[in-house]
Image (tube, rainbow, N blue to C red; front, side, top):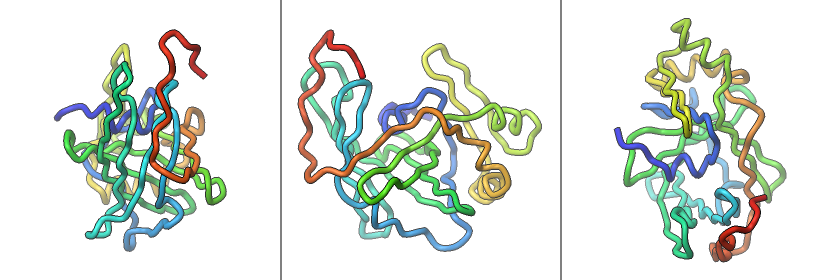
Length: 196
């Protein structure tokens, strides 16, 4: 399985949750018109802009324009986004359409109509659940970025997150997205400049 830095970078959090299946709702795919449009965030100190739209098949897709590599050249990565609502919580499964069949799971929170937050760090409770075989997966420790890799199918994920979702994804460490008028990307941070 290829590792998709682009999808992780959209979450931009150490300690992310990878999954072989998306987290899906019990009923039909939830609609979230508020997410459609252009959103600005930060990728390791440099700006990034995500344009979220609904594809013809009903899926949400995001074209993420960012400085993925050091230097002044930006590139666009296309992501698929599967939304789920389980109880009061909103979840997003994100994958890079070019690189990886794996999804990255996150919880998102709407903060008015012009801001949203994306939370994607695993918790000790999720690690314990894997050890106790309450959800299938493994912990992959790495000196750069450790990940949880869930292997449960969508129904098993849904059942786990229905009962334990509030404790599976941390409230700490999140990306903040702000609505903007266009997908125009500001210039990158100057080399040597302090990161926010």
